Length: 109
Length: 112
Image 1 (cartoon, rainbow over the protein chains, first blue to last red):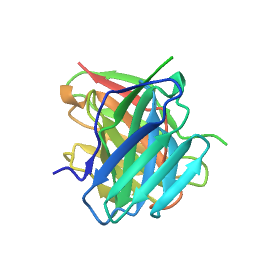
Image 2 (cartoon, each protein chain N blue to C red; image 1 turned 120 degrees about the vertical axis):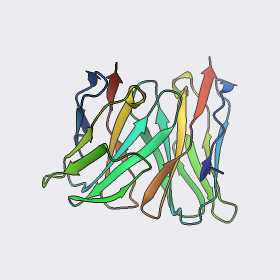
Image 3 (spheres, rainbow over the protein chains, first blue to last red; image 1 turned 180 degrees about the vertical axis):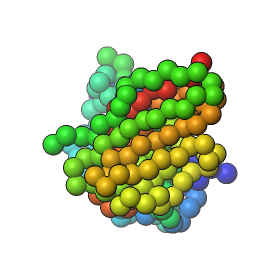
Image 4 (cartoon, helix red, strand yellow; image 1 turned 90 degrees about the horizontal axis):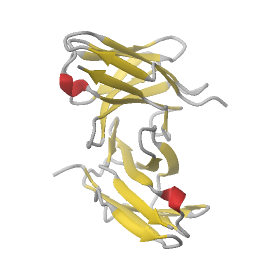
């Protein structure tokens, strides 16, 4: 079993839709959680960083962490074609950082 | 504020050669992380340096090595290159362990 599981997609939605991206993890040592957006052939761009259970909002993005269920989510409201990218979850704990496989998102105009 | 920088952007080597990749962290950051992203695969953790010391390494052979300099910049060396080493190598930096990590644009290594 992988330490971090993330559905690779692809996920295709119409412009304006609410997008839900998810990751599950098995290691209780993970204490810090991040979401990145990566465009093709570019470095990942940090979208959200959180370390506590609950919701954190930043513009159109909301990160949700449920430590009891070992489940994290990223919601994107009013999705735009420019949001089309690969979204990576990442977790830090026990002196290591583990990334999910990434979910490819396509937002159709 | 300048972000994480990496050089070179592209690197082409032949099998058996050595490759050296460089990374400069965000000013004030002391931790540097190296990752490998092969085509179709996710980011694989390679190495973590903090305050000049190697703190942790991923599941890679010893021919992947590196160091961190007093100015916190870092170098990744890959010896005895193999075809499967072809990948995007990403460097990230953070202020302290557990802090959010910011990535550079990457170095694309091609081994022929």
